[in-house]
Length: 210
Image (cartoon, rainbow, N blue to C red):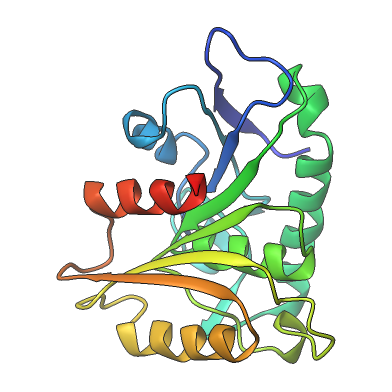
């Protein structure tokens, strides 16, 4: 079971809207709780910790969702482990929270954004929206199966035009594939590097609430 931090409003009950945010490579479960002031009032915020220790792969003392290879390629075995553990975590979410969530929005920063998108495309309909902050779409045919199951997925993708870690051109490549697959995609670009800005979070949450 993945470790996690959580915030629930005092009046939390069944039907609660929940935002699940996944941290980036080499970070930890507490990192994205800093975004709590930017989420809508009355929502819960859940931040799980990735299953892979980052240190053996040179990612520092934090954690990772998968092992990165290059550009938009990742190691399949570590990805499948991350996806399976995230599935188990989300399946067990009602028991962990003590309430049954209504709307679940899944998102994340950098590797967490990439992971959120990969999980949502593999589990159509499970997340009402996906929020990708400075991530990429993994270069694998399995990410966008030919059966059309990606149609109807809702994705917000924000990215820095001066991102040195995940270049904007890589985002453009992934966005094009999503559009071709029929995904409901909203994109916003910012004059920043590999980080987020408050207006990006606000715009993402406006998208998720619609």
